[in-house]
Amino acid sequence: MIIELSEVKGIGAKRAELLRDMGINSAGDLAEADPEFLANNLRISVKMASRLIENARKLVFRR
Image (tube, rainbow, N blue to C red; front, side, top):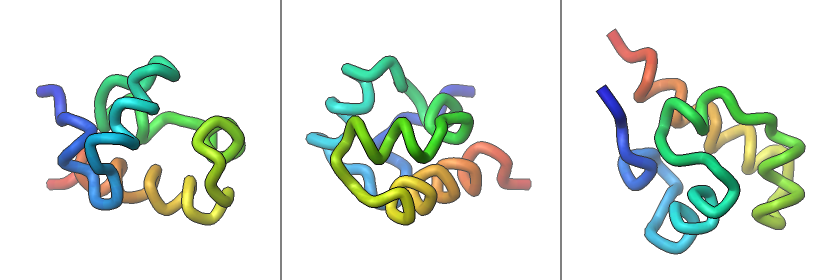
């Protein structure tokens, strides 16, 4: 099951579009992303990038 980026807390339409431009097309892709890569490409802090990745992991790996 593919979970859309827009379902991840902290990801709106604009950020989802930027992520897709980077090749990250789903919450699963985001869950496996490197925080440094995200931070540099989205121009956000590594802390914020890590938070987005963690939010994606919570959705992807929920029980």
